[in-house]
Length: 279
Image (cartoon, rainbow, N blue to C red; front, side, top):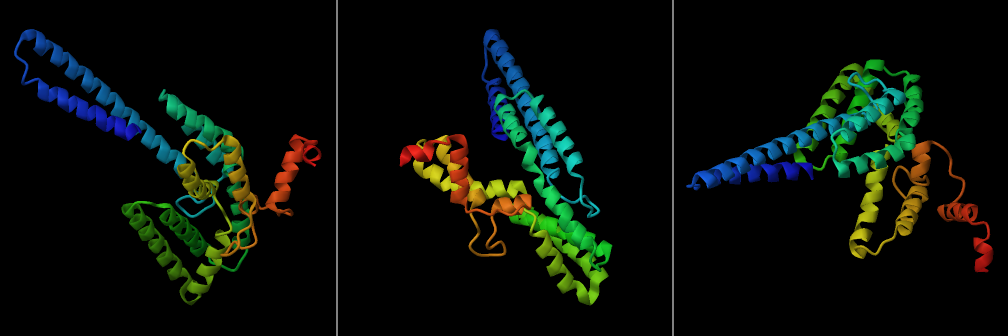
């Protein structure tokens, strides 16, 4: 939105500039100069807003990364504080729609970085294995770049992430030699247990979006909540996560009941007489 607004303002500035040559009377010339100067001001403000938001957005997204540049696990509290600082700066941009988004992000903050706690356990277990620590750090960074590659939607981004993954895999290979394949598979398999909340949201959106598009404006918030509840608590039927639920993977806690039983529990908690009234 901000990028499009900036381009639109730049085009407006260009159009006003072109009109200057066709002005003949002093009155028209003065009017068009004023219009051009106003267009320049608006364009500059739009560009500044977009660039400021883009910088802060990238900064906040980087705080979701588990590993720092050396392959060490980052501190959850520090990441949360940095995200909050970034959100506060975004608010200061004074854009109404963006401020609403900031408020939504803040509401998710308590559980947004739960995967850091899961990662702490996973990385702790890996660190206790007889693996060269420099090799382990390189593999952690390679895995992180692989995740970035999977999420990247643009070819340029995918190439960049793929190149970085290969670079760190080469570093790990230099340390591990003949043990490389076995260790890499083990480390990647363990790290794959970590599900970032951002990935979970993307997965939810991929399931909900076709339904939203098909139903246009007829979907209610209650229906949306039901879809999200189902997705978060249903068990995977195949793949590496077969038999587990997204919430189990995200929180590390065992889900003892099926999603429908959990839904009934929620309904009964909110309205103890609901099921009695339906009989």
